[in-house]
Image (cartoon, rainbow, N blue to C red; front, side, top):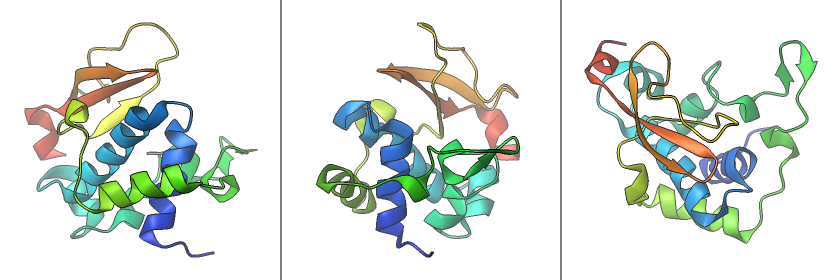
Length: 148
């Protein structure tokens, strides 16, 4: 099944941040589009000039982009999502070049499942804590990121 960029973005936003309200979903969409448009490092190479599909399906990046996790079926995946007008509106907003200011230039987000955010993520020192929006922590690239 091949989804359009709009459909993929709406589904991943719903899956990764559907319970986080408009700003939480916009922040996740912002991170994905930041990865698509970054001019250096790993995501620059992965996006190959702006390919959203490459970013979303990069191995090990988004649990929602796979139907299997550690050899077990993952029921919370983009194939099981049914986006509504809110998710499509956020996808359209992001695809039009909009970004949530609070998410800045963040390239990563994670849910630590605890009240505090780790100061670094990924743990290789390429991301530094920028902000927390509801349950997700958002990270901007450090100078180490450019060499990834």
